[in-house]
Amino acid sequence: MSELTGKRVLVTGSARGIGRAIAALAIERGARVVISDADADAAEQTRRELDAAGTASCDVSDEAAVGAAIAETVGLLGGLDVLVNNAGIEVSSPLVTQSTESFDRIFAVNVRGPFVATKAAVPHLVESGGNIVNIASVAGLGGSPLLGSYCATKAALIQLTRVAAIELRASGVRVNAVCPGFVDTEMVDRLRPDFEDATQVPFADLVGAKQGRLGTPADVAEVTCFLASDRAEWITGSHYVLDGGLTASLV
Ligand SMILES: NC(=O)c1ccc[n+]([C@@H]2O[C@H](COP(=O)([O-])OP(=O)(O)OC[C@H]3O[C@@H](n4cnc5c(N)ncnc54)[C@H](O)[C@@H]3O)[C@@H](O)[C@H]2O)c1
Image (cartoon, rainbow, N blue to C red; front, top):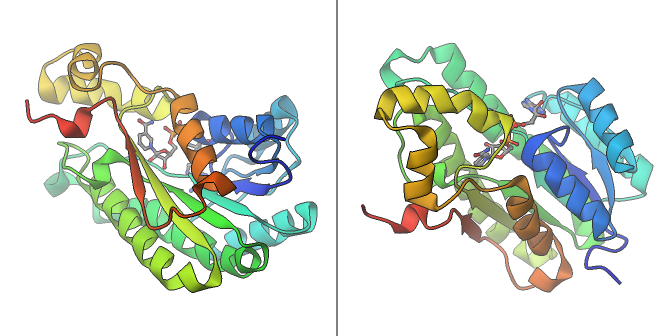
């Protein structure tokens, strides 16, 4: 029996990138997975490619749409064991020149999204003895030029993880976070030119020096699926760093 056999899983932002890899590995390990993304067409294509159980798409910043997607997932799967709050966006800008609208938008997606999804999912997770994995970032643990608002959202997500874990412990619902370094997805493709401008170092050299190599979506999926499984039964309120030593290094 695989470690996620029979688990009913919803992954937000799973049409591509890290979310897609989490959905793919969960399916491989026996879970029934619903794909959800703001890009509903891409979500449907991913569902077909992965032979996932269904789609329930939403923009995670829209509380009503998130509630509907979770209700749809529960209808499709007959309950919910795991919520992966993966959907997130980046903004590349010096803090003092970033617009307030863009600051509000990144908080709406990266912080309000997991908050409203957690609220909607918890009654179902209490019923199943399930758990939540929040995809945070090493950007929630240290600062980076150009990523001020992104760093703030990921620090907020780590704190939401901790407090939700404490408040939900008695109900049997676990809540954990994963903090990857740079991972090879379209998000990093978009950030690459701005980082090269800001540091005057080729991105590949920066990544090679600081984390050995780029992470893969599969690296993140591995830890996420472990945390979602019953093997992680005593782990809650934690954040797992996967960064090839990036945050361990002073030079
Ligand atoms: N790539 C990295 O280096 C890296 C590192 C650490 C953490 N993360 C985090 O991992 C998560 C996934 O990142 P990725 O690199 O796969 O990004 P990506 O941009 O490659 O893919 C993100 C997916 O989320 C969807 N999405 C965006 N906004 C959404 C919204 N409002 N509602 C629902 N879906 C939405 C997109 O359509 C896309 O399919 C994010 O939370 C990101 O912050 C990424």
